[in-house]
Image (cartoon, rainbow, N blue to C red; front, side):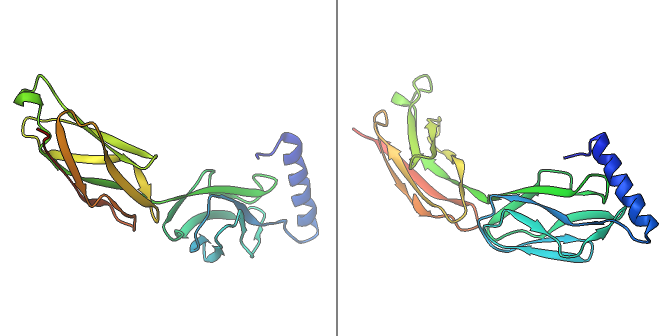
Length: 205
């Protein structure tokens, strides 16, 4: 929260009082964290660092800084399988606000699941009568493939799958006169895009 005029006045009076006594006001560089479910997050401010444990909702650097000292908090290391970003300004000067209160949000990394299809041709081999095949990933999403003249192409399941989460892609019937099988549709996401799904369709009759 930014200083109100009254708050700014209080801060300036405090700084002036401390200066008269030969000292400076001290500030803790700190903030809030949302969504941190994995270990490994390390924040840095100049040469100072702080490790933020899994499940933490706040952080604070152990070394306080003097009034007027600049700070620039950066993410030295992202948590395992996650990406964090500051949602407030992460730089400033101690004393600009009543306190230094940063905020960052962390989210699990996600990756696409994709593959290739063959045999998805228009009805009666005419592009004027297209056919579709729908793939779903559990209850979280999917894709509808529309026939092409060659019957072949690529597809991508939407939305992307979070790292560490299982996926199970299946074919939804009916498929408009096509019989389709899907291979490699089940697995667990592990820090890399999945692109080996293969949908093979042939005429049902």
